[in-house]
Image 1: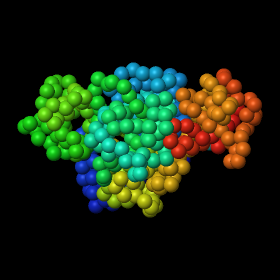
Image 2: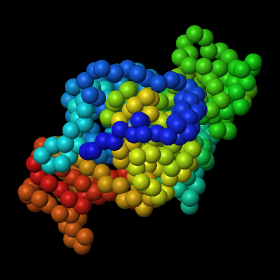
Image 3: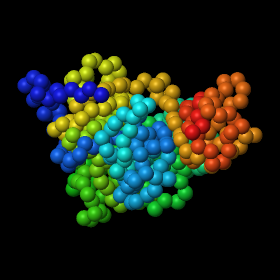
Image 4: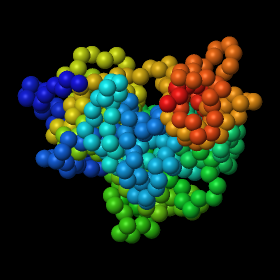
Length: 401
């Protein structure tokens, strides 16, 4: 892909505006420029929900996860077998290349996954496809994956009082979350919440995230960051309120940052907006001045952006605002060995996901084989969209490998 070096062409006034905007963005994110990686081998950074497996697919890039260090966002070691569709991730890997099939590929060195809200369901509105979890409004759409083991039937299967884990994209404009994956949980040792600090009272050591008041008065030196109004943080909370306050068990900066000269792919919501050319996505400053006008850009818009980081800023070489229809029509892809087959109900399990296929009407396309070849242990690739309840993949095409 052709890259444009725009830094040397910035008008002095634009340079001043860019500098001020970058300072504001970094202050709001609670961190500085990560210059690690300068002078090292080309590397990549991707942030967004998982849309496929075979390799882990995030933002259209196939990351080979064979040797990747997989952790949750508390830093605890995990397994790549724990990764699921819709989980929001941060991936570091080798420079992104293009293979013989024009697929974008990289070898992942690390994969970190983490949810935005883990807590009790306070309210559900089926007509609006919304729920409130830990006081935070969460929207559900056609691309929201529901875990088909713990939430059979999607949103209608949940009840007030359930404890759920929500992987999501956060909208700084409305302080709402758009769920990319929802799982029902049992008893948990701590709740979790990722969001923007507001109404900080440094003397009382309390702040708000959304409508919830949070106290960090009992937190000692374990804190990794100091809360600042407007900063994006992730907190672990004791699961029972005391005097109307949630008590912090620990907190840290809400998101990682790409390194200098990283080849970056982001999918998320615009979290700060100065102009069509200057904004941030997931707290990462973006300079899109070298790209022509892109319709649909605004605070809270869902975008895909890619480019190279220079001076702490993602110099965009490609940018797309996603419409609601495009989000609803999100394609998912699974590749691997079939683990079980239920031909009576026209479905099989692949990478922990139930895949449904049709034998009449709007029939699934089969390549290099037929429905008769579906069996446990057979290697296939399935592509399609989610079912209406978000718990299954409706295969438009199944390819035998």
